[in-house]
Length: 420
Image (cartoon, rainbow, N blue to C red):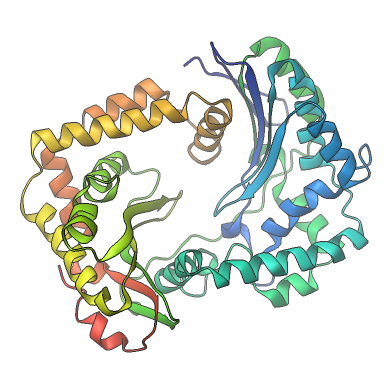
């Protein structure tokens, strides 16, 4: 993987990654602005602003103008909002990359934010909030982060509360964009069948006038193990997230965590899947996941279970955490985990959109980029001893919390199960 990086005079960074053997190209504009950058009154504005990008610019006044231009070349386009970043992207036949660059640069930077479009989009976002709350698999995630972080950005919903969505005005979006959509907060990544030098010049022309004023600083995330340990919501079906705080992006050991979680809960041969589903038939899905940000991180086990057997599933999960603390993994199991991570990465990085996101997110949040080869070398260097050491650091009674949706409110009963 050959990664080329340049910076404009205003500080905006451009990353290009030529890819041999693909006919596509992706342009991604990623902005260091998301949930963590919001105040209480602004909660939801990053996500709302992302929606508004597709509603029109001076050059493309209507939403249909944007959609038709990309649809007419067979392109795919979308956007996303996360904890610390917002992204706008288009993936096209490489011969149409100029169109993709023109459209994505325009909508990400030059939205006109018409008041009538803001009014229409309120209803769309309200329905999105309703949809997420109606889906227990997604809503239980919101409960988990609320449990771990409470009333601070890390504990809020990315979509925001409805009362905020009802109040946001054009002036709020303009102010937020001036504070965060500045050159030092923006990375433009283009990956695929491209020629780097030519592409960089085209990008530079599109973004050379972006403001170089300093970005507004955000508050640091606070992690408190003394917070409540269980948060439950009464529903007819049962889903849970069981986990705690983990390592942040700057911690060099975070790839050890990646291997650890792979052994425990990634894939149908993982320890948790084998124990909870295959041997005991307690869950349809069970897996481990993580969220790693610049100054925070979490790990979690998530599962959808028979409502009458949730306690047993949680007990089996904690038993697996204890086992990996008490006994080193075998060389064979470590090798399997390494190969699984390497294989998944190889599949992902065959696609120009995944490559663009891979490089943009690293550059934006870490100010450095690991190539796939460097990443794999770090995975290969993980040892059995390191896995056990990190497991003993993360999997402790005071760092184990449970968010659950289910037909019960007896949280004290489940808190007794949170022992490793």
